[in-house]
Image (cartoon, rainbow, N blue to C red; front, top):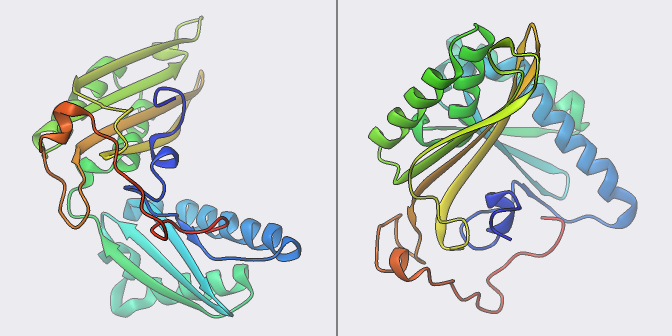
Length: 237
């Protein structure tokens, strides 16, 4: 199972938090889900230059809080807060209600799988060698402190007539260990020969309750964490 699904979805409630945290009835659920998707797409399209790692949305009544994790928060805020004010106005138009914007800096972009994938995509769009690009990305990720990383690209690599898939990895990626802090990112690189899909996995260590990521004994025994009653969140969050 760990090899077949997205690592973040498999670890929801264990090492990963839901990126949309709210509850709604059947009549409102679809509408709010579309709003979240539209808001995320707007942020990625118009503010991707700031290095958006992820966007979390939390709703409480009529209040909406949007937490944006960015590698370059200064670009997102703008001079005297001009950019973030514009973003707030745009999101309020999309969501149809007042929005609160919070910006969090990604201290090590090399450990964010999404940012690594987007960096690879940018280079492939400029016709860089995919093998050299993959190797460089893996080296930088490991040097930043990751315990393992894997990159997979698929498409007409190097302009070849036949589409194919190539993969490279360094270190270990324990996908079956639910306590393992494995980040996942995906994007596509537009090229003259078609889009190239890019998937990135970054393993940062073992997470234990109340402690930071560590390379403890659980990494060797591959123990699965126990989920205590009341510790997980309900559906739709």
